[in-house]
Image 1 (cartoon, helix red, strand yellow):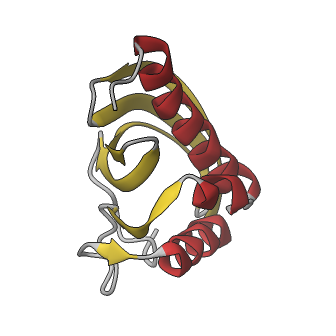
Image 2 (cartoon, helix red, strand yellow):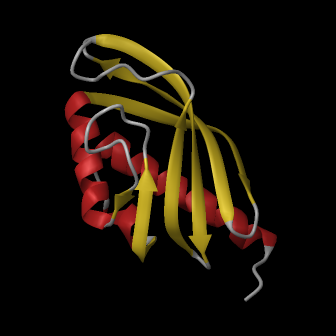
Length: 134
């Protein structure tokens, strides 16, 4: 099934907006409506249990609860690009972590299976410190 350029771009935008809603507000429903049954992801958290690929919707909900328990953030997309199989968004994340203001640039790369997100991988612009030791 061939997709128009407009529908391709909308997958990345829709996926990122749902991801943003989950991280900023804790609402995962919109994002989880967009993923495949074999959904998986990787986030570069320097913590045991998070330092490898994660599987499934429940694990994504765990990630959101974990990150929101540590800090509140605001995400701002900077650049979004996409081809037939992947979408990438460069974004800024700003907020408070361990009582200190932080700002970082990150990239999320979505892999699509038709209109749905099969996986994502996040890349961090600066080294992460251990969340347990500010």
